[in-house]
Length: 120
Image (tube, rainbow, N blue to C red; front, side, top):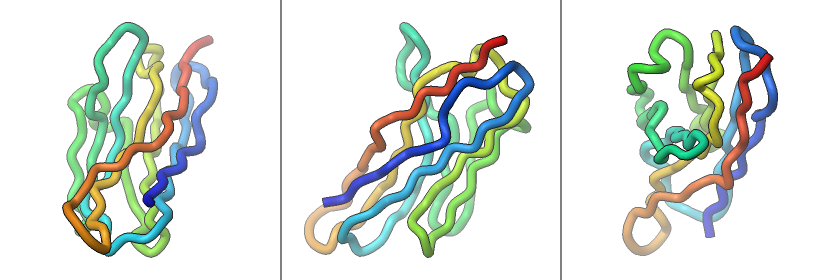
């Protein structure tokens, strides 16, 4: 059983910063891609950023230059540093991890979600 536990959400003023963390635990062989989606009020879930096990990254156009994704493979943890936050960044942020289990097929696992609210 693989679990992803997120932390770091909260309320921040426009222009402020937050850092989200997501730690994977359980028994598995390895983790491939990790990343973050967000889902704003009344909107569909959208990809924010991804990072491969080798460190290659990709970002949604709306967050390029403001958000930075990183990971610590030794800790099975992915981070999202969010700077210059805007009200439109308000959403529930979900992390994911593509996991190779000890047995069976690769699976995508999800965190429980953490609320980020950008408001004055």
